[in-house]
Length: 100
Image (cartoon, rainbow, N blue to C red; front, side, top):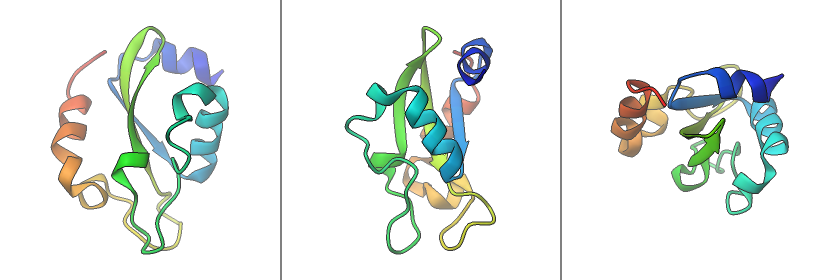
């Protein structure tokens, strides 16, 4: 069902919350993650690797910005987009305010 839901949404930003959701998205769209083997993973400090955890991908014929954030109950790091992706927050905020 995930594919149909994602295709139907006009959202330009998709926020993937937690490792299980990241694994489900990777298995649904494996070719999108060939060069992002660490998508859905946190570094040793608990912080996310922006280059691995933010990507553009085509879903439902629309370009979407996909971003991983740790689950709020997971240990370490921030589960807030603004603090986890301070350098890229403006890009995420812009994508959230537009439709695909």
